[in-house]
Each structure stands twice: as structure tokens, then as C-alpha cells.
Image (tube, rainbow, N blue to C red; front, top):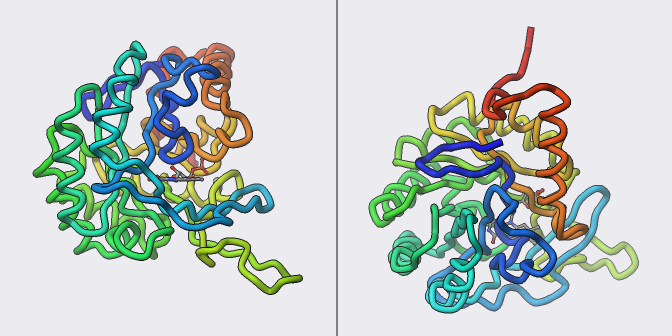
Length: 302
Ligand SMILES: Cc1cc2nc3c(=O)[nH]c(=O)nc-3n(C[C@H](O)[C@H](O)[C@H](O)COP(=O)(O)O)c2cc1C
């Protein structure tokens, strides 16, 4: 079940997605963290961020809208308060999700995180649709994307995963821009910009007005984007968007993903990742798959 890329060995290809699994340790009592391939901690910024005012979450048909606005304790507090606790959990791959308003912010966050022990890689969030500046702006313009990736890569002492936005016209263009600027791997998709209105009050259901759509509703679009990205670059791709079963994982691997992340499913079942790992193991046994990496890019089109 193990996969290896960007110099990191994951015991299985199932990683908990950023922003849906806190700082990991909150889940310690209910989830066997060591069972997961890895997990991404919440997006970390230079300074603590309070996030957007409520309402910030709304359930939609087969999905969820969120505009949390990257509430987090800041990179420094993460290194000092959370990371030492995480290091005590044996055999876990920790990926730190990095956010900034400016290129310099990304660089500063990475410098702070470089000081912490026990982080396997950085995931550069250039795709958050829920903040007024930064985030998605970098992920929608190939020139800005190259700039922020090159700067982050220069600052980073760890492998760099670049998390792409699905809110673009051409995923291959953005994937290649990130690869050319030095990304060691890509991850996609972040959430799709969406909106919901209460017909009675005529008001937006989310205070930020627009929000990010995630969950099973986005899965077919995410699979298509992972397919396009993985066929445009040489570096490995981590796929996500609506995964809640082992079969969903297989779909993303066949489309070209080397590993996957699970996000919204953690909200309806905090043990979702663990259960997916178990059923993925069973699926591989039943289908006589000895090495899960054989599935990556195995889509048959003729
Ligand atoms: C409540 C919530 C918070 C999120 N926070 C982050 C974040 O901090 N950084 C990030 O890169 N992505 C964040 N995401 C996006 C997820 O990591 C993931 O890319 C997206 O939800 C698609 O996967 P899913 O359909 O399995 O949830 C967040 C998603 C949700 C639902």
C-alpha cells in the first residue's frame, strides 16, 4: 500500500486534507493517526488569523460551502505548541499547508516552519477562494504562480507541493507553470467558488457571500482536472475532491494521481480516512493488486 514520491514514503496513499483535520492532534482520541498515509495541517499564515465571521459553512446537495477564511494560530505558534505534540505520534507524515497574502508572506512562513522538526513537506496554498487578498490570486495567474513557487522553493528546506486552484480556465497551463518554477509535486483540487442564497431572507447563506464548494458534488470535475494535470507534467500529482470511499480513491489513482487527500468526508465521519484505508486494503486484496502504485495512470481509454 505504500507510495513514495518527492523523497517521502507514505505508508498508504490516503492523506487527510488541509483545513478538514485541524492540527491532527485534536483527532488523536478517535483516529489512529499512525494509520493514515499522512495529514496536512490547517493553512498556516505569518500571523494568527481569526477567519471570516459566521455563518461560514452551509451544506448543499452532495457537498458543502465553506468560507472559514483560513482561521489559524499562525506558523510560529504551530511550531512551538502543536508540532512538539505531533512529533510524539509515531510514524506519521505531517505536511504543513502554507498561506500568504504576498510572496514575502509565503517566504516568511516557510522560514518559520523550517525551524520546526517533524514536517515532511510544505503544501503551498495558492488556491484559497475565501480571503480578500493572496491565495487564489496567485493560483489564477501563471506569472504570479511562477513567482510565488520559485520564491517558496528557494526558501524551503523541504519538498514543496503546490496546491492548484480549480477556478481556472486551463489546469495544464497552471500545472506546467508550477512545475517549471520548481514544484516537487502538485495537489489538486482546492474548492470551487460557489454561492447560495436564502430565498426567504434574500440574503447570502454565507457571510462572505461567495464560498468554496467541496465534497462529492465536485468529484467528477476534480477527477477530470487531476487527469489533465497529471498528463501535463512529470512531477507527481496528489488528487482530491469529493473522495469518501475506496472506489473514489481508485478513480483518482487511475486518472493519474500518486496519492489522494480526503477533506469534507472528515466532517460527517472523523474516522473517514481510516475507514477508507481499510477498505482500500480490502479492494486491493480482492483485485489482486500487489503494489498500489501500479494503479496510478492505469486508465484504459481504448
Ligand atoms: C472547511 C474547509 C477548510 C479548508 N481549509 C483549507 C486550508 O486551510 N488550506 C487548503 O489548502 N485547503 C483547504 N480546504 C480545501 C480542502 O483541503 C480540499 O482541497 C477541498 O475541500 C476538496 O476536497 P474534499 O472535497 O475532499 O473536501 C478546506 C476545505 C474545507 C471544506
